[in-house]
Image 1 (tube, rainbow, N blue to C red):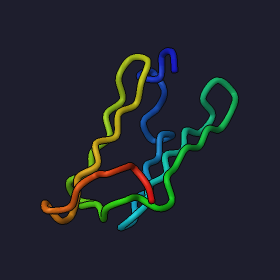
Image 2: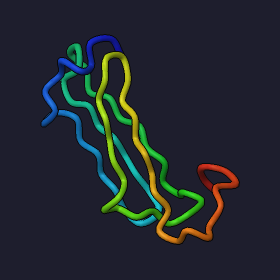
Image 3: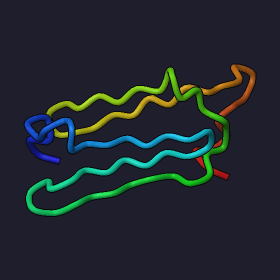
Length: 76
């Protein structure tokens, strides 16, 4: 996503729940974008999950709620 770091941060919305996330990007180059995973393999720690916006990309770092869980896959 070229020049995404120049897009207003209030138009990049990360919605989190215990086993799901969705990112919405509003009015990026005249379009609205959405990506999400509805059934994550592990429960996530919402407070420790972070999003970074850099030139050309958005990175979402998911943290597991239970440290003993393993990410066999992103979703089940």
